[in-house]
Length: 121
Image (tube, rainbow, N blue to C red; front, side, top):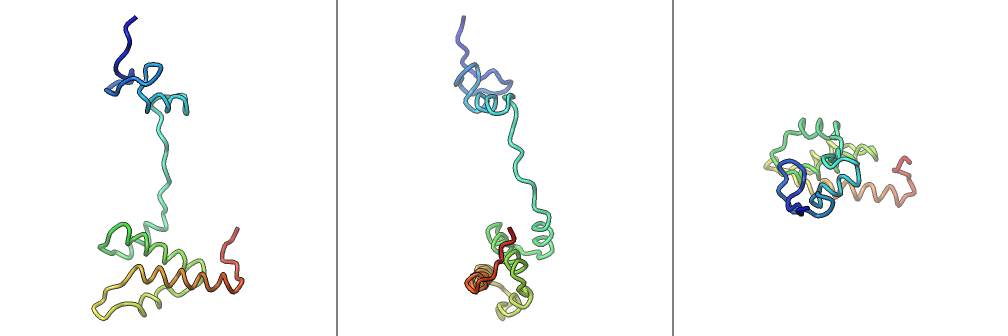
């Protein structure tokens, strides 16, 4: 019997790890019972996509995430996000998204220190 060199999955050219499969397909087969199975991944957050598309910022994904964190915190602790944004808009019309996020986080921390339960478990 000749030893198999390549994975037995079609179009996979990776060296055999065990039982005729490469490491990736071997562990998929162990986990799911199917060497071609894949993780499903996270479901997209509909609210996040709506808010970020409406905001229409031409910024990086990291900056968009900071803005989303700001919006989530504001809605959680009933802050007026639009007032905070207008108060922190620079004279040239730009914003510091890091500053917005830190303002919301400090307001949340203040409410927690006052003994308010902002977590609805």
